[in-house]
Picture (cartoon, rainbow, N blue to C red):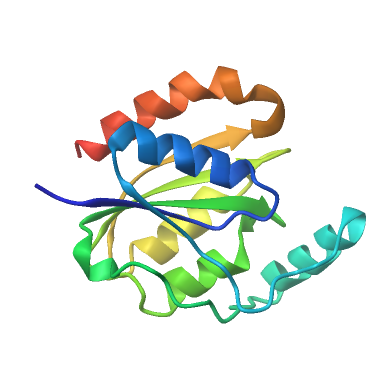
Length: 161
């Protein structure tokens, strides 16, 4: 039997909320990715700083994980959408050899459109892993109860692949 991990980065809590739902649904382990130096901006400035990191391809250094990624076969990766793509801490995870020979599903939370988040992440994932599927989670703070059954169904279906 394979072990499943929900691995996520959350800036304001929406991605964390979906990650916790997936982990509880699948009885999976859960781990939050934390950059060594987190953006501290609020309001519009956070969009400027976060968006500029995406555009410039930044890969922030991450704090050590509390799990051994080698122990897991299937990993659900969660990210907020920043500047129409996945967040810089997830870029570090996907581009620096943290994950190899895993089955990976992606979920992304946003308050607009997902743009190229899935396309960009899929390309990075498929370099060394098997891409399973993706789930877009818009407006989590306002629509959590509406999203909840969709996320549960997606997680269960994806975990059987």
